Image (cartoon, rainbow, N blue to C red; front, side, top):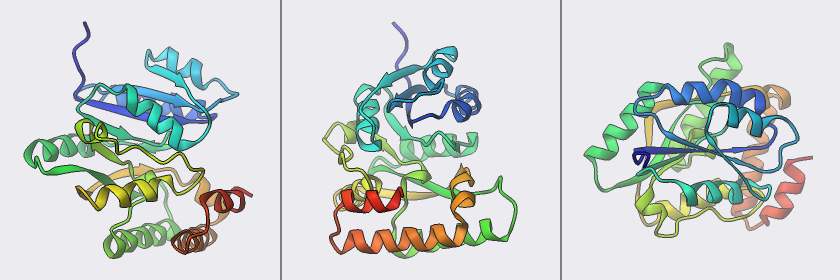
Length: 230
C-alpha cells in the first residue's frame, strides 16, 4: 500500500491544460511529495490527459469551484489539504514552512498564504499586491487565490465549501474563522496576473470591492455571478 502523504493538494480546473503542464512537475518536485488531486469541471481541452501523463489523480465533478473543491477534499489522504488554483505557483519554502508551522502550533486549523505577483513586473502589479495586503491586514480576509489550507481532521468536521457560484472562498473563510484559529502566512503563493491584465488592474480592484460590498449587503451569489462573469 502506498504510504499516506503528509499533504494533499487539490486543484480545481476548467480548461487548464497549459497551466497544469507547468504546475504539476513543480508540485511533484516538492519534499515531501504531495498527493495531487485534479478536480475537473468538464474541460474541453487536454486537462485530463496532462494529469494522466504525470500520474496524478483526476476526478470529474459538476462545474463550480465549490463542488470541485469538495470532491477533491473528500478524497484527500494527507493530514493537510491545500486548495491551489492551477495558475498559481507554490514555492518550496512556503510549502515547507507551512508544514513546520502546523507541526509546531497544534491549535492552528489552517490558513492562507501571502498574495504575490512576483513574476509580474510593473507598478500596477505592486499596487495590486499592496491593496491585497491592506485587505488581509484590515479585514483578515484572503481570497482563494492565496491558497487556502486546512488540517484534514478539521475538514472532516464538516467545514466544506458552500456550493454557490461565487464567493464560496469568502463564505468558507469567514465561517471557519469564527470557530477555528486561522492565519495568513508571510510566505507567498505566486499568482498569475493573466486575469488582472485582461480586465485591467484598476478595473479588477474596483469590481472585486463592489462585488464584496454587495455580497455583504445580502445580494445573492447567483446574481453576483451572472454580473461578474459577463
